[in-house]
Image 1 (spheres, helix red, strand yellow):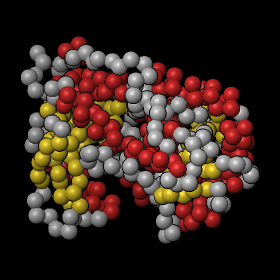
Image 2: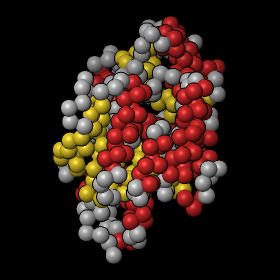
Image 3: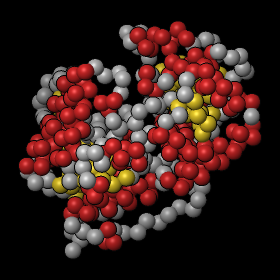
Image 4: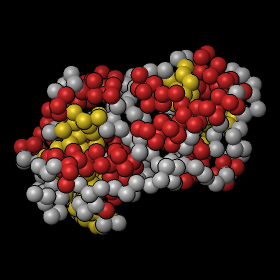
Amino acid sequence: MKPETPTILILGTRGIPAAHGGFETFAEKVALFLAGRGWKVGVYCQDEVERVDQRVRVDTWKGIELIHVQVASKGPRATLEFDWQCVLDAARRPGVCLVLGYNGAVFLTWLRLMRRKIITNMDGIEWRRPKWGVAARTWFWLNEWIGAWASHRLVADHPVIAEHLATRRPRSAIATITYGADPVTSAPEAPVRALGLEPGKYLISIARIEPDNSILPIVEAFCSQKRDMKLVVLGTLSDQIPYHVAVRKAANASVVLPGAIYDQAAVKALRFHARAYLHGHTVGGTNPSLVEALAAGNMVIAHDNPYNRWTASAAAIYFTDARSCAERMRQAMEDDALVRTCGEAARARANEAFRWDDILLAYESEAYRLLGVPAAAAMPVDRPSPGAV
């Protein structure tokens, strides 16, 4: 029998309303979706303070309980402290725990001991990222194993991630549920022009400035040719990080480096009005930024690997290094028909595989499964017409 008020707790992000990244955006989406369908939803939010005076407090936002947890530490230690305190609190509350990421999975053993039901989105294969040293990679590798076995259900956001997780747990414990994006069919030009850009006259990259996201080869490829276009590289840059310094040094006057932009409306406009979206990610699953580019109808120039090939499919042209990236940029800047064809394929791919309703329903089904409720008990969703924003 369906419980009167099914309950879910969302752990693993810095909290909502979303302001930091893909997992926060997803947490906000799933929280609002489930709250609107009769669930009691709690989302853990990290409050960084100088001194802890009230470890946990709860307020309400749009029908969702925001469970604020104070931490007085800084950097990675603050994240671990936050994760541990969230687990301690969640162990005292009823409901299914939806954990986003496995970086603090060692703490999930306590939830399991306290008989809580756990769904974990296992994110990407973090320990393979070249930016981490031996100690960090070892920590992530161990936590991946712990998260795989401490959780009742694992979510892979990409078939390649599901294949990897099948080396840790039986396939019957793994669900493949992608990331989603809302279709974008229009956007104001003001955020574009505020950066001195002309709609349709620039390429854009939206990613952390890191080696595994190929930012330096992308900048080098663009600067190796003279075109009447610009390259916009969104992402935080620090003069204290050698890779960031190298990116700045490689950039010429046609490369716009505005830093990170957290105004989602501005980011949406910049993406929508770009001639093409550059996606250099080499490690990971279904990357949110790539999915959002598809939903905006962007032609995509992507690093050639199984993650991106499956996600973007015919919406992208692919590169392997700076030289081939430069050639793909040349095609994008010269071939109007190719841009249109890829843009149409992008919208079709987004509608086929990355609809939020389908994705959020799949998460709800997984949560009901752990509550012992058949998926058929879930309410139907009213679907918008194709192309609705």
